[in-house]
Length: 255
Ligand SMILES: NC(=O)c1ccc[n+]([C@@H]2O[C@H](COP(=O)([O-])OP(=O)(O)OC[C@H]3O[C@@H](n4cnc5c(N)ncnc54)[C@H](O)[C@@H]3O)[C@@H](O)[C@H]2O)c1
Image (cartoon, rainbow, N blue to C red; front, side, top):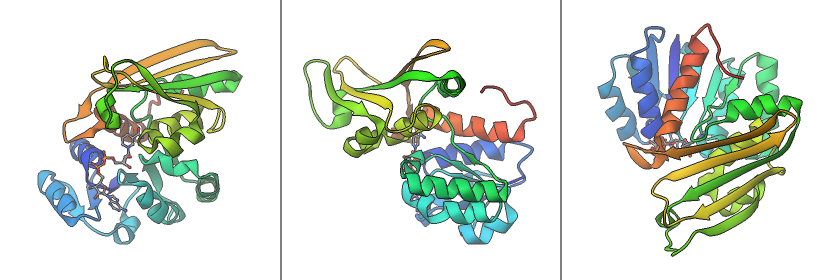
């Protein structure tokens, strides 16, 4: 299997290095608008080759996007129209209902898949299963040290309470987590979001609370930063690599 990677930053680098060690992957095409980034990554792996997206599309089975929402807007349609599966990290791009439905339509017609890794949150499998039986309520509570908001607070302060759609307008840095959760569960308008600045917090944490016909769910994750990008959670890279393994492996675990 051949892999194309768009975005050779923190997550793209972790995925490329992991893919380089997977015997099922023969070739890894790399593209980044910043040529220095793709060149630097290419030097560190054995199966890498730098090419433009349009040039490598013919020769790949799966494309991994770890770049930006802009990159998704630019390449997703083209990738799917070429019958290639897409793993998409910049999931905030799917907030646009019109754009998301367009991608879904192409993927259906072309019999290919858009994989959205769970990223910097956990519990997405539970939310997916619970949704089948009906979810009454899903809430995301994101807590960050005040410095993450560029502010200082002496006590725990709730900065936002509302739905996911409004949360991402006011706090775009939280966009990917809110988008994955909304897509898995009750959608952007009915997923509640609380954003908290807490001087006691040392890490970015995401707590998911849900209840429905299945019972009650509570999942909390404290994220370590990616060693190559303190603004990115290490878990996001790990979930991207796990998604790639999921595509390759015959046994599919989880909802
Ligand atoms: N789903 C999640 O939970 C989750 C978690 C963390 C990050 N993300 C998203 O994943 C993406 C990558 O994150 P990262 O931490 O690796 O970022 P990063 O800044 O370390 O790397 C991004 C790379 O993509 C390149 N790039 C940007 N726009 C591009 C384009 N149009 N075409 C080609 N290359 C482009 C940049 O030059 C950079 O090298 C971001 O969009 C980020 O918001 C998602």
